[in-house]
Image (tube, rainbow, N blue to C red; front, side, top):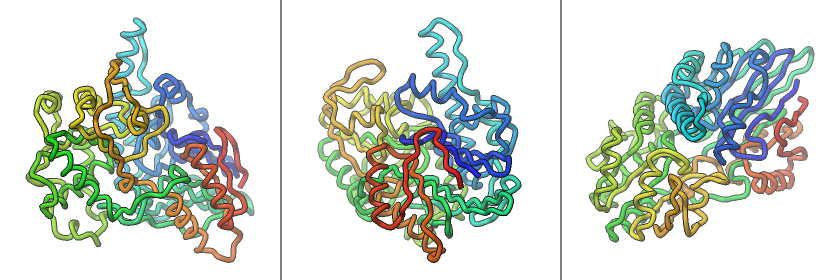
Length: 463
């Protein structure tokens, strides 16, 4: 029994881990690498292993850094099952189609620039075939992945349908329980339920995105959001919110709905300017059975994502028209790290205006435009043009869908607590930058976890 760390090893994106048990091979995620364009393109075009060796795939959730290379595997001949939750399957149907569209457009751009044919990583057809191979399952239901591996999903509390997975692995007379955290959310996030850690583990593959940081309280995020909007409205400026189309956008719309009902923000228009976010919001509305039923707004509002001030702009012409309209207004647009999508047009037109506020509500990976904005670079490059960054930049970490170092340890402690007499699990930290991982490994060592490491790419661990 062995695990190989083929992605999100000493970095945040490209989640992919290879589990080998009894001659069978299972992938845990197969996500896109993101960051420097050319470097990411080369990494994404390299398969983590020959497709013929893959017997099954287990997908933690629909975010592209976890799911985005699945159509590429299908294009290369993978025809086996992809196990995930039902909501993840529904979200993947819109997210992978959107990703395929981006691959096709990027290929067209590169072909024009290089004056030679460039094939996209995968097509819309490949994305549709990948979704066809997904097997949607409910939480807390055991299923056989391959002979010798039985698994169950628990709610990771990260986005709709996100899961941690416990895999009971048997080879000969040996049995081991592997827990893959996926991305661990936080207690108290809007709409979705709190994380539910699996019970017990011999080995844990644990995300560590915020392993060296602490988040402000979730409870204060809505109030901070209201304060930012009131301040921008008083200046007559636009609030640009680069947000992941899946998860973050819906949480923001939910909290804006609550602020409107409480008369806590002015009556200014709110635009969700992302076709993918619009489609994802439709999927969210399809799955009220996994909403957090303890939340007041969930209990008393029939349609969480529709209210008078919010407008959904699907057409390109509608999106472009927003740049001609004076503020105040709120524009929520993808992508979350400002690397693509309609947010770039809004930055190009508004980042130099000191009345503008750029509201950052999610993690910004190294080498992304979002990271440069957060670091207050005096100039930013958008569509090849240098633009002075005069806008106000506000960062609300309370909206992070990843647990901080205390929340991650509390999740791990809960996994361990289910079997208190057993030795502490071996912990492999993934999905984090080196500084975060090294600090978190030291923290966990002091907390009684004697074997903690952050594997290098393609390092292996024997169970």
